[in-house]
Image (cartoon, rainbow, N blue to C red; front, side, top):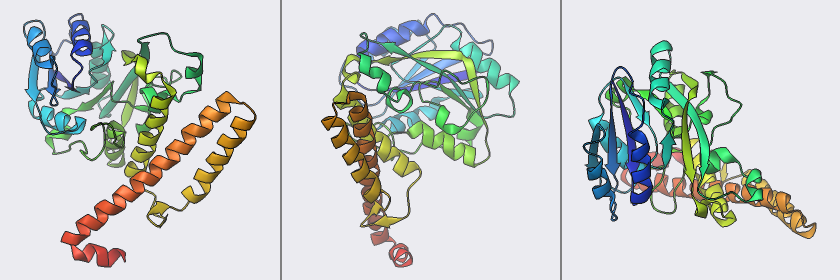
Length: 316
């Protein structure tokens, strides 16, 4: 048996369409269930979940604690079976999605993590400049060149990944300090989890035939939104792999990288190079995200040191 686990918040309309697509899934021979954790929704999410109670093997829960990972950790208590499949409330699975993940987990018994394919599902036709976007960090789209086989942690995305349940039964949980929580947060919670598992010796496998379509909403095809995403991406990378060489609480290399990106932005503006300007802005914001999170981590360290003075003395 396997369990599909997702968190949702105030996306009743999209959630309804996603759950409707689940009604057409092929059934894995070992059976399955889906756990949806409502993370404090104030819209019609509860009614949508109730409307599918007799159409799907659906179990719902409510978690008021803010943050997607709080909700997913609560949902892990309801998981059954040997495989936990993670996805998002805006990811539409292909009909054989669970069958393909189930087959991969059964065949590759020496692997613990499985990542499927994520392709875009555009809510409206994308603008031409979308080709400049790094589709992985921005829209959680997998590299189309990936083949079946071993894969690194940075090639697995939250809308389509599976992990053997035994790892969670051993006490592993998602890090609640990272991932969606309000409008400002370090992103990359699934990456942090998979990276942590790989560092412990667990191996990951890419499943090319397990496909979901990740909805790209109209408002996400706005350059201002993409640039905010760059900041969250930088924050997440700094939290996942913190740069320890700091000056005034900021990674030293950023005193070189941020001005360099700024100069590239200025040059691109002067030369009317739209693509170059877009890419320079992305990296400028990405580096700023690193700086923001480095300062945040330093504040957290000092707050912790107030209750554990020996930590501050050791680091001084």
